[in-house]
Length: 252
Image 1: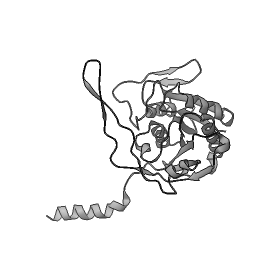
Image 2: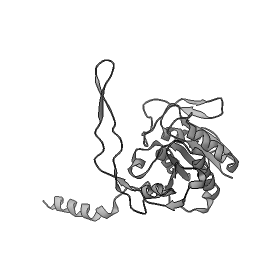
Image 3: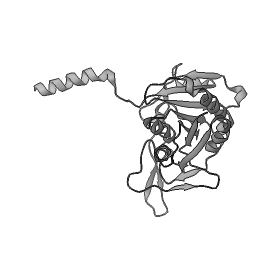
Image 4: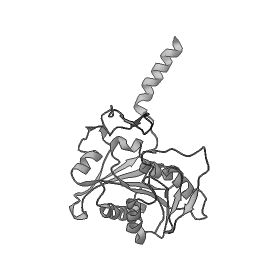
C-alpha cells in the first residue's frame, strides 16, 4: 500500500479533508496531511516567496502551513521528513473544479505541484457540500487502482463527484474539460466601514461547451468525471502560424 500525502485548498480544518483521510485510512500504508491553515480557494499554483513558511503540527497529527496549497505539497514532498510520499491526493474540495475552474483551483494546483515533484497525483472535488462520503469512496477506489494506470510524465487526474448518495451515482466517465463563457461576471462593488469601495470577484460564467464528452455533462448526468490533465500548456496547433508570423516580421 502507498504512502500518501494529503492536502487541499479549503484549509486544514475543512470537512472534506477529514472525510478523505478517514476514507483512505485502510488503503494506505501511511498518510501525512499538510494543508493551509486557512481557506486558500482560488490560489492556483502560487508559491510564497516573500516570507518563510510556518509548519505546525496540530493535535490530530495533521500539519498546517501559513501558505498556499502548492506550498503545502512542496513542503510535504521535499525533504522536510526523511520518508517521502508515493502519491499526492488533494481534496475533497468543497465544490466543483470543472472546465476552466482548473486554471484557478488551489485543489488542482496542489495535485499539480505533486506531479511536478515526480509523484502521481489526484485532485478530487465534490460538486456540492453534502455527500462527502461518496467522494471518499471514489478516492479509496482510485487509490486501490492507481498502480495499474500509466500516465504521461507530469499528468494528473482531476476527479469531480456528483453530490449524491453512493447508491445514486450513475458510474464513472473519462472526460475532457468543458468551457465557460469567456466574459466572466462583473466585479461586485461594496463599501467597507471606512467608506472605501472594494470589489468581490464575480461568480463563474455559464457553460458554453458542455458536449457529451465533457466533465460538465458527466456531472449533470450523475457520473463521476475523471479528466487527465497535462502540465504542458503549449498550443501546438499554433506553432506553425506563429512561426510564419515571426518570419514575416523579420523580412520587413
